[in-house]
Image (cartoon, rainbow, N blue to C red; front, side, top):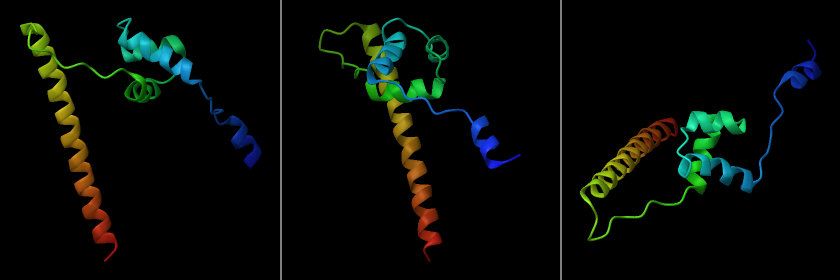
Length: 105
């Protein structure tokens, strides 16, 4: 098989407008679709949709003084998830730093 045949069989990289990405994210944020269902509906991978969500989804608002118990529970859940993500990222960075420090010696 020639190189030309191999490259023609590779999937063509598609690009999407910012408006398309925002509309896809809206399916998850406003319409309540799961990432998988929304990704299937617009014809992209769920990974791409998750990346767009991180970039385009509106930031969650914090609860005020008059928040209900349910709102407080929801915020606590969201903040704990963010903390887990930050801790995971920190651990990855620590390991990467140690690895590259070892490699440079």
